[in-house]
Each structure stands twice: as structure tokens, then as C-alpha cells.
Image 1 (cartoon, rainbow, N blue to C red):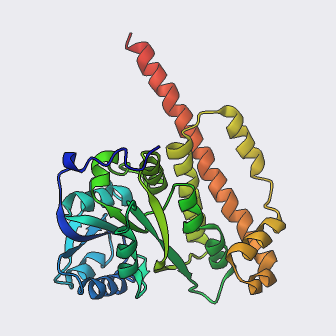
Image 2 (cartoon, rainbow, N blue to C red; image 1 turned 60 degrees about the horizontal axis):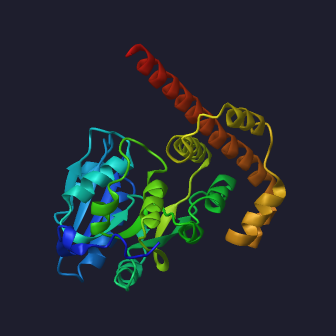
Length: 319
């Protein structure tokens, strides 16, 4: 498909030339200050820019911290709580510039982040730029944090498949006019769905290793919760399957641990050699994390089946 198929700029309401940084936030009081300080510092070299933080129902001091920054606009998305995609949609709709940067409230930009990402975005035939995300280990290189870094956020590989996460994404604003906004209400997988929709429509997604941000790795319980949400999101938003056969297969996979050679391969491709000394601990973490993902996917499929049955019953009784 031609890259330029949907680029009819005359049919898109032009926005002012500049930069809009949209940051969805939910209970990020410990991280938001560092993120905003670095973003504001880098934006100071550009005349036309804005920072929009979209609070998604925080119960900590996130909003108070944001209010301490006079040049940051704080808005709230309270209709769909704990939905970063609904929060991003609200920020995008409120933005006024033609370049939109989606940044997570946990991602602290590197010094080369903004300059490199914008330079790549301004290249010919580039519509979306996915910046790299570098893990920060928090608790003495725990097995769960290491495993988190081995299985998540391989941005370069995702881009090769036409997908990217929204934690660090540079986008030309007219794409939202053509492709639409992110799915509302959901917590996981909306970014990969949207970016795949954009690339399938002919827009060019590229990777920029120099536009990187720092992201904190997760301890075991948050990591398991994350994998559960991803599994459920995949079942609902990517597969949307109602297959009983697939459901049974997932149940059998719950008792089947990951092979240690797979973990070693991940270390060789994404990690460092010293991580092999923790192979037993990593294997134990992988079992718990993998089952969290499978459980989420099972629940998602069951909900898909229940929804399908409900729709059929409604259609039957409405005749």
C-alpha cells in the first residue's frame, strides 16, 4: 500500500506549527516532577510548545505536584478512570500544535530525547516515531525487575511489525483525523492496536534509538498485575476470540512452565551475561508472570464468550 494514500492535507484542519507534549497520569507523585522538569527544560529551546498533563483519577499528590509548574496545563479525564488511552484522547483533543508527543508519566527523557525525536519526525515520509525506552533497575537488580526488562518494551522489534507503545511516541497530528483516536475505556493494548491501524493505513512508523527515555522496572506483584492486564487486553482488543478450543489450550498451558533455554535466549538478545547467574530465580519469576498473562487472557476470552451469548439472546428476544 502506498505510504501517501491517506495524506490529503487539504482535507485536514491544519494546526499551528509547534509541539504538544501530552502526559497521562495516574498516581505518579514520585515520578511526575522529574518527568516535567526534563520536558520543560528541553522545550525551552522551542518557541511554540505546550505541556498537557491529563489526570486520570489520581488519589495521591500527582495533581498538586503538577500545579507547581506554571507552564504546564492540567486537565482531568474522569469519565473513564484508570484508562490511559481515554486520558491520551482528552489531551490530544485539547492540544493545539501539529506535532504531538505522547509521554508516560513514568518516563524521564534523556538529554537527546526531544531533539532527536523531532529531527526524525521531520524527515520525509515519516509520520510516527517510536523512541526507545531504557529500563532502570530499582531494587538491587531483583529477578522480577530483570525479567521485566527482558520481556517488555522491545521497541525496535515492535516497530518492525508495525506496532509501538505510547510511552514515548512522536506523532504528526493529522493522523488522528484519518485514523481516529485511541480505543476508550481500556487499560492495555490500545497503543499497539492504534499504531497497527495507522501503519495498515499506509502511515510510516520508524524507530529512533536516540530519542530514549528512562523507565522504572517493576517488582514482582506489579509485574504480575501488568501481565494480567496485557493478557486480558490481548484477548479483548487484539484477538477478540470466542474459541472454546483456544480457551482449553490456555488452561493446559497454565501448568506448563517456560523452558529455561528461552530465558537464556532473551538474556543473549536483550540482557547482559551476568543475568545468566540468576537463571533459576528468573525461571521462577517467569512461571508466575506467564501464568498471570494466561489467566488474564482466559478471563478475557470468557468475557468475550459471555458478551457474544448476551448479544445473541438480546437479538433473539427482540424479534
